[in-house]
Image 1 (cartoon, rainbow, N blue to C red):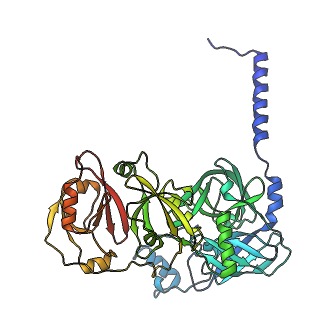
Image 2 (image 1 turned 180 degrees about the vertical axis):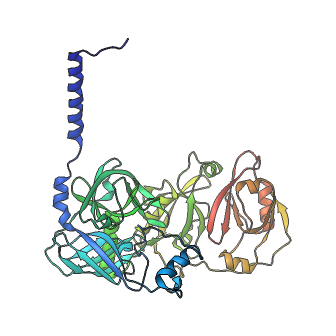
Image 3 (image 1 turned 90 degrees about the vertical axis):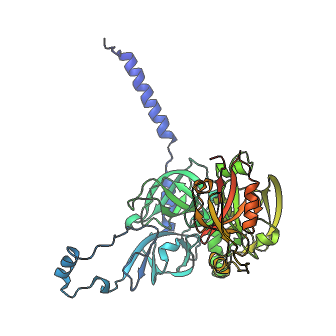
Length: 477
């Protein structure tokens, strides 16, 4: 039997529906005043690249796959360009890219992304009132994807700068920019996460949002509900080149610090600790007798670096830097990069289960050539043998030079069945440490293996040319 809702009940339910709808509507933010007030300070940026036929924007682009040689593509191109057509000899053309930016000073300083103006031969800034200016690139920093421009104008509208660190996950934010060249488009969403680390972007703790950001939004501002700029829209995660709900912005305090340095000295200086680090996995945490995974595990200490001078060691787990917790390895580089150079920093590490505070005089991040590891002599190789299913030997001087390893370690010549293979050790890698014990040679490795416990996982540090990593080995497997 089907139940029938009486008229009074139906009216009551309708009233509740309207009431809930009104309450929900009242809670949604109204962005009209924010957009109207701040749009004049947001600019469109176009760039020209002479002698190129590629997209220079870098962060937002569609990749064109390489076409296979032969028919039908050769026939099609030759039909239009003649029998002597050679795709490799195509002439270069001027290319243009679009982006956004915002005015941070009345006298014409404009902030945008590095990838928007990178390698540009000409940069044009168009204001909301349709005036256009040829901009000077004061400076550009690839590491943070921030660029500072200057146009010849005064009395310009400016944005109000806030602080991205004050944002909370779930907070409403708004972006203004020029997606696909449509000036002053406004999109809104919420903060999805903070402190995101992206591949090859070590010095920026990105703000993740679900604000619709598309090609052309790059360099535009991200506002909070108070009308303050809290981020610079930089990247999207996309499989198609369009918006898919994952957008990333540079915290404004990071961008302003870079802009101030570019304006005052034309370059950006960053703090340098001089260690290679990795995450602490659950297995590694167990091997180091930690209650839970946390911190940044030191896989290598650079020679003559601030870390080495302060006494930091491979196997140290950095858990705090200048009083701030290091929850995982990706949190450390932005902390160190923004630290004051030539000033002491307090680094708390776990070493052999005990906390130890180390005062490190932070250096300036050197050029890549200056950061190369020094090479030191090594004794002649000894006879090979099999340990843990591994054929290992001491390193030759040539191997040390190639791998950048100054001393110690044994190189893996062959991996046979056994716990080492299950742990992920590969041929050509160098075993540098077992637990907290540094391996100096084959004999030292043999003695270290003999003392390994069988009831718990063991942390093993392996090195290769690309870097170092900690693995966990279980003898009981």
